Length: 277
Length: 164
Image (cartoon, rainbow over all chains, first blue to last red; front, side, top):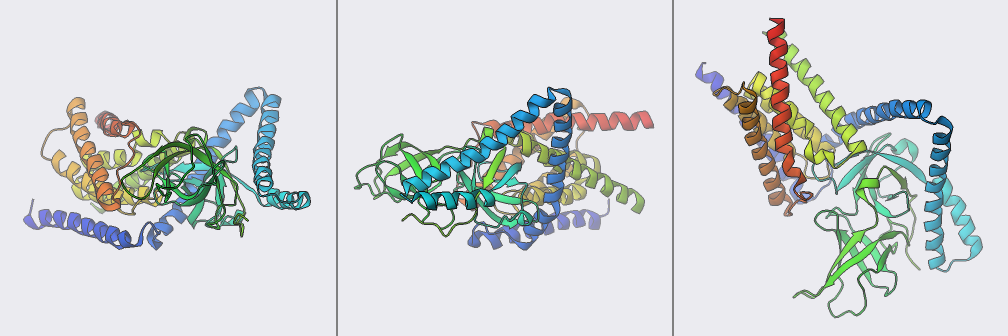
């Protein structure tokens, strides 16, 4: 083999390595903001992903619908869908009641809420760190925009939509991502803090002073709406442990209510001007 | 020469498409399985052994960047590790016989483990965080890649031998 050929191999490797290093170093100071190149790849391949999953689900649904108790299956699906919307409404009503709104206002809000709710299916997960993001089958054509709250079947907070949002798909940043932030309040002792992802499937409640009283293990956390992304009153998780630290803040570990194993259908909530009053 | 190269590129594109479809199905139906089976790595190692280090490096970059596009991490981390995986798998496999199933599997196990180790290290270095390895589930990934990769290579070799 001639020496120039061998050298060209090393040059290809060196070129690719330098290209990746530049790509990585550009992003590091900017955080996880998506780049045009990344966005372009997402736009091109996300419809393929949706097509593959839809085709597979289509085949699966034809098989199960026609060969396996057709009528019962259809009824079950209809009821499941109804339950999905009812759960979202129930949570919404609880939230409004918590905020002591009037009945008429609740009714008006509920009608508006139901019409703007977007039901979506999960079509992809993060191959590298699957507790950080997922991909859903609804995009800008369905009214999805970045920074819309996403809940699971039972109305528990899952995360928010982030860029890139393509025509028919969107990426969702999970609340278990370390770079996510949700303004939350504890249901009993009314402790307000910022919740972020911890390593893995847990979260941490930040900036609670060690000197501050209140807060118990097992206490529910709900959104405050202060962040103007997540509507107030959505169930987020439960305090798992509270430990004092040498710093000025307590270490509070939170277990989110949503479960990865049952995360197939989600609800994308309309954006609100929000904020607990 | 050019025809053969075009055919190789077409096969590689089909393999990338198939691995993307497989990745989409796993993501849609069992996200945890994505930790155990990395279809992109599988494509990179099988093509690197068959087509050499340059082909492997370029295919590694394409597959890695595709994986990064659907991940919230730093764009380019998987691209870099898969480029190195493709290059070194192709380079070393030219200098040693990896045809027998178990030897091939052992070789791919070492290469995939190094790729995973580098990826975890880079993540820790760039993001400053330790990744959740899901109770060690992610460490099964090199083993699955090695066994499936060696199996695919052996099947491809048998098909080629039968045709010849």
